[in-house]
Length: 255
Image 1: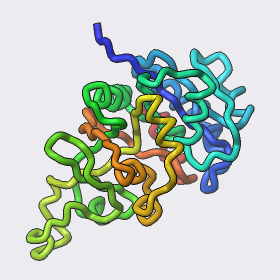
Image 2: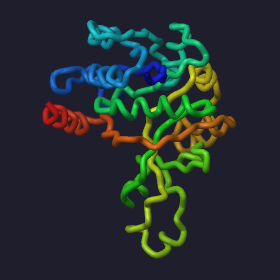
Image 3: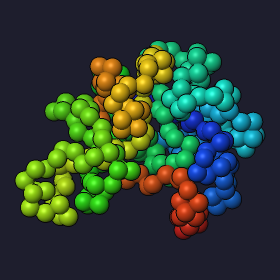
Image 4: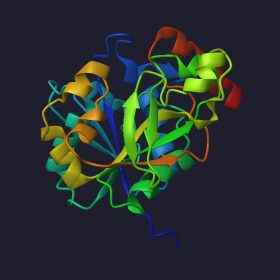
């Protein structure tokens, strides 16, 4: 029997600026947040919790085998929303919590389990996933976050810039470098609930503000993030109307 024990918590805010009402937008006839919840349930989590500030999202989840946690509307991030949820539901400090974003309707169950296992097998305070960068366009895309890790698999830095800077390869040809040593970050996280509470209480760091990457707050404060390699690809999330149309086509093709 697999002893891995974890909770999946899904922050779902109604007021997304680029795609208003995003959690309730329909994909193949179901609200997006329901698709995400189904992915979390398929991963074998002990419990799935949706943390939201809007009763319409709670109502859309009626009948699903999960818990809805109603949170304040003024949270700056999903991490803050889940920290409130941890307090409301009384999660033990050592409970592993996976933060699955509410706009990931195709997140693979194997990947969700992988980030929980990465944390369970580490003494780091937090865990995340990465995958190899496969092309130079991704390497130089500021919307694709890159990372470097040490020999133990702990994150050294996250950046929107191409890291590590491959000096000799880029000097020859930046369009076709040997990209195999670069890693792209996948935005799924696991924490123990005690650290989730501490993370939310940390002030924003200077590096976080420069790069607009919340995970840098953890490194700048001296904490560790374990980085596992995803066992399966993570399809893109849904942020725009074009993404929603793509997700609809994919969902219909998968039926």
